[in-house]
Length: 213
Image (cartoon, rainbow, N blue to C red):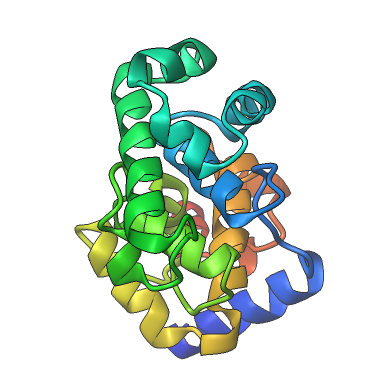
């Protein structure tokens, strides 16, 4: 199977079987999603969604979070992984939003990555989910699933995987393909014991093809 064919099967399958693919993080505006994505680093979306209501009651907008100290933010996120570092990142992020961006979440990746706690993956999530830009956020799920299916070849880093996916996917579908890969990796193509026998995408999966040999 050629790479072009594999991408074609990938697009056909997920367009049919997962026509609606969105983030599982709960949010109502760009600021809320930005907070949630910062908290979600090395943490489950389920846990983030549990703490977000309390965070937003205390810090409903950037200006409120900006004047709080990281020590004041910490109690609301203490059940999240790395709460000390994330409390500092949230405080710094909010201050920069207020001081440099008029309390508005910027749409450009180059501006987003200037915010404390925002790396390339987080910036791509915001650009993709909020602004529908052709940005591919590569987390552990995307990195693993894309390699297993055969969408990426010999990608050693998330950036390398990102470049390959963006190159071969139609621009208008990139933001949705991001969620396809995440959700498939979260519930089917799991890390330790992928559920190949129940996977409808097995017929074009490079990993499954090798298992059968």
